[in-house]
Image 1 (cartoon, one colour):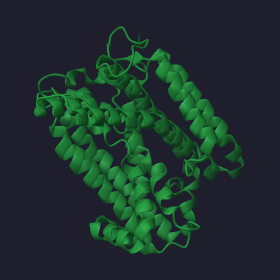
Image 2 (tube, rainbow, N blue to C red; image 1 turned 45 degrees about the horizontal axis):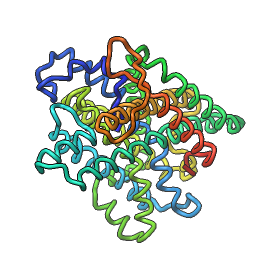
Image 3 (tube, rainbow, N blue to C red; image 1 turned 60 degrees about the vertical axis):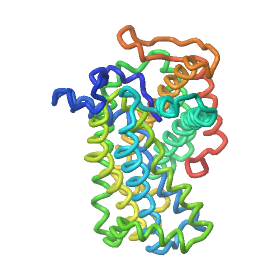
Image 4 (cartoon, rainbow, N blue to C red; image 1 turned 90 degrees about the vertical axis):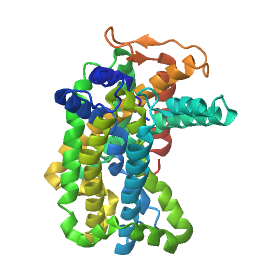
Length: 383
């Protein structure tokens, strides 16, 4: 849930009676759509770096997989994107806004309003959802930046010892920079993420002809067959498959910033096609070359393009991390206002946008948690 207040400047025109954005001019609509790509989809957009690789690693040895198993796992990912994100969030949950706002606490308010009273169950569910997001705000920066920089090993094996130190340095710089705010660089987030999605979608598409059978993954039957035939390990794999939809809740959480329709258009016509093409391409590549399971995302790129892809992916993961960090600040402030947390120091980082905030104590806790995860697990696969 990347409730990214630091990008409210892009989204001011989204506020008002029409949360769907229908009343906005065409120019404003596309500005909002571009802004949503940079803010809303960073987390889910960087999942191809590790989701399929992690799911397939549950099989002993990681290689020698049958093509039908690869198709089955990719099918599960396809339909997780279609059911959990597209159907649940885009088509259903985004219709339930609280005066144009989304997010777990807005949903809690709607539920309490519908019930006519403040129930303990709804209250506990809201608190639990907020707590889960706080965990996501620690896990996402660690696994995203680490998985992006692991691509250096695909560029040159001699760079492997530098992956962990580089990850630590980037994360420390990222959290240190929070006090300054992100208004000055937020305008670049959208174009960078658009380039990332176009690149990853294209890289996936060019590998599909290596194994046309991967298109069978578009049938839900292949995913269900995989689950039924693999028993307990099938459900373990399913747990990793859901890495592909982490960050999907951001579509609902950031609805108040960008409006319903700009987010829906960005998802349906850019992000979803790019993600599906990339996962299909990774699956086809592994079928054609089982060694690619080592890091299928980076193996999609020809040798000379791997370093540029590492740089682009690292930028994308920093953007994804920024979204959940500022989302944590925003959620913490909401929790304080609702009396769920004690009063904390809140620093406003912009004279123009009230929503751009920095909470020093939360920032320190997140940084310590992220660094602890990186040092403890030391690889995205282990994490």
